[in-house]
Image 1 (cartoon, helix red, strand yellow):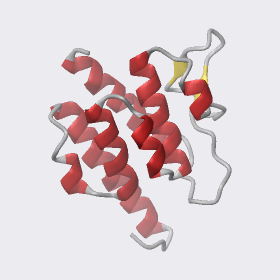
Image 2: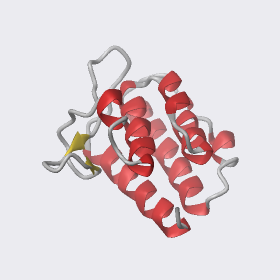
Image 3: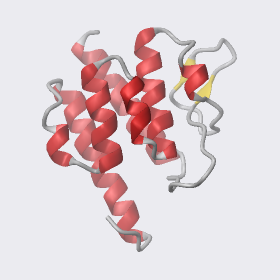
Amino acid sequence: MRPWEKVLLALIIIATILLIPFELPGNDVSGPSLNETGEFDYNKDSSNATIEKCEELDPLDRNFCIDSVAERANRMEWCDLIDDEEIRTFCIARISLNETMCGEVVDEGLRDSCLKSIEVKKDFLIRHNKTV
């Protein structure tokens, strides 16, 4: 995967997070949508993807799909299903709100997206009087 592809996908994920209402643990959240051709759709705000549907995608889309489903459901253990080490670290760091872990991501764009995602999530939690 080219560096600019990781950056683009990370930006799309952040945009998706901002467009889709943040869900707290215990909610039945299935993740981002697949479009009519069965491809991962980073931009849809209705969520019907599952880990099982993510498994049917090409490797890059699969990894980012699992990342999104795991974050929306707040299920860090699902990050372990991600093959790409950088995307797996990105996933775990965002769910655990661990900025230090974002620093382990080598790809600059993905690392910046990780930090921004945590910043947005913490801001949301603070604004809604949730524990950070």
